[in-house]
Image (cartoon, each protein chain N blue to C red):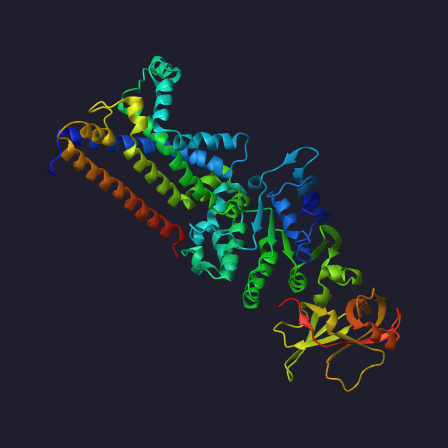
Length: 358
Length: 231
C-alpha cells in the first residue's frame, strides 16, 4: 500500500501544509497537540475539504483539487477510529460492528466477523448497547467496526487519548495484533512518544501544521533537532535489540543492541526474539571515565556525536554507541565541566530502560 | 346529558378522521423539510423557514382565505386539480384536511427540526466513513435518533388539527357531516338557543382527546428514548 498526501488547508491562524508519502504498515502521524494532526486525518478521510492538494491511496486518487476530484467519505473506503469512539447509541454492539458491511458488495469484503471479534476480544459484548461499555471496550468495538467495513486504509486518531493508563495497556496489544495480522495499513495519530515508539515503523512528524520529518521511527526519534517537536521532556531514543539471554538468579533479561548489552527486568520471550527499547533523554547520564561503584546496571560505551542548541539551562546531546543513537539531556554547566565535544569518548549511564513494546 | 346526539357524534368522528389524515399526510413532508432546515446549506433556506412558519403568525382566517383563493374551484391550483384529475377539495372534508395540515405544519416541523439538530453530527460523519451514502445515514442514524422528536411533532400536529377552527371554517365552511369538525360544531351550538348542553359535551370530549394525545406522546417518547439509550 502507498499513501501520498500533499494538501494545504487554512485553519484559522494556522496553515496546514502537509506533504508526505508512506508505504509503511503503521505510520504514526506524530506531533504535539495543536500541530494539525486531527485536521490532517479529517482531510484524508474526506470530512474536511482541503483548499488545495492531492491525496492518493494505492494510486487511486481521492482528492485532486486541480482536476476537481473530491471523493465523498462514503466512497473512499477509509476506516476511521475516532478519539471518542462514536459508536451508534441506538444499535447493539453486533449491529455497530456490522454497520459498514451493509454497504460493501460481498466481493469487496474481507476479514470474517468472527475473526475480528476474536482478535479484539469482544465476543461477550455483542448483545450490549454502547452505553454499558467501558471506555476500553468502546474503543475495541470502534476498531472492529472500522475494520469490518473492509477499508483499504485505517485511520486511528489518538484512540487511546481518552483512556487511563490501565485501559491503554489493555488496548495496545490489540493494536499490535491489528498491525501484524489484519493486513490493512494504518495511519496512527498520536502525541505520545511511548505509543509511537512502541507501534510505529514509519513516523511523520508534524509541527505547527507542517511536516518536519518523515522516515523510519528509530531514525526520526533519534534526531536531536526534532526533540522539541517530538515530545520535549518526554523525548528520547528508540533502540532495536534482541533478547540475548536470561539471568534466572536475579530475574533479569539481557538484551543485545548495537551499543552493547542492556539489562532489563525479566522478559517472557525466548532468546533471539526482537525487542524495542525507549530510553528517555532525561534518564541518561554521561561519564568521561568508566564509572565504578554505581548502582545503575546499564553503562554503554560510545562517543559524543552532536551537541544540540542550548535551551534555557539544558542541552540535548546525541551519542553514538556503536552505531546506535542515544539521546541525553544535560545541564549546560555539566557540558562545560566535562568539556563535552563531538568525537569525545564517553560512557552513557542509563538509569531506566523502558521497553517500548511488550 | 352524557348521551351524544347523532350530529355531535358525526362531528367527533369527522374531526378525528381529518386530524389523523392531516398528520399522516404532512409527516413525510415535515420530516423532509425539517431535515433540510436542520442540516441543509442551500440558498433560500431562510425563505423556506419563513414560509413554513407563516401560518403560525398569520390570522387563521387569512390562511383559510389564501387557501380558498389558491384551491377554490376558480383558484389556479384548484382549477388545475379539478380539470386534470377531477379532484375538488374546496368545501369537502379533504379541504379540511389541507387546512388542518397547513396550520399544524409549523409546530410539526419545529419539533422535528429541533430533534434532528440534537443528533450528534459526528455520528453521521462516522456512518459516512463506514460507507453509508448520506441518504442511508439519514435513514439509519439521524431518523432513529430523532424519533422522540418526530413523535412529539406528529402528536402536536394532530392536537393542533383537532382544534383548528379559523382556517377550516373560512376555506371549507361549516357543513354538517362534511366539514363540520368539533370546533365548528361547538361554535354552531353556542350560536343557537339551548345548545349549551351539547357545547359542554363536545368541549369535554375535546379536552379529553387533547389530553389523551399529550399523554400518549409522553408515553411513546419515553418508550422510544429507552429503546435508543437502553443499556
